Image (cartoon, rainbow, N blue to C red):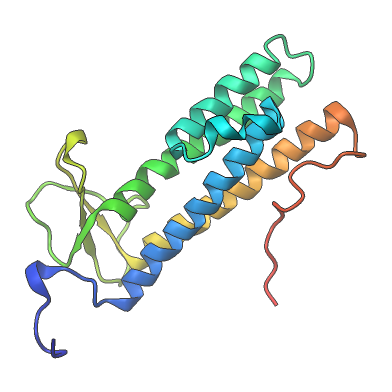
Length: 194
């Protein structure tokens, strides 16, 4: 297809900047799911992996929430404030997961399918091209959402930041329970750039 020819049905597969931004969201969310599995292994034991391997992010988030309550229902291991912070981080994870699902599983176009467009997740328009993502899984309703490439960059960075915050908090909880002799989540540290 020549550069001046439109892509079929307005699909934006040829837009490399958009494709890279969507890919980064997918990569960060895959790492976050791996972190959630590691958190579950800390809460329920390493042999629990057989139950949660291959589960969706939605399932993993819910399982983390339930597992913390079950293993420390009376707050004998961790303070109530630790439980509250853990659950708040999981609420943030779930919020980002919902946006991520639209981004990763949606169909991208350069113009809205209809006039009912869900606004961009972070507000005011900047001088960036707007793209429109149509929900591909219609069982949850038809929806078109507006995004820019900077929105997708911000989403990927938010998923990463949420992962680091969750890992740091779980490490702090683990240290309070067993001490520093047995460090938790050693591979989940803030990335450094060279």
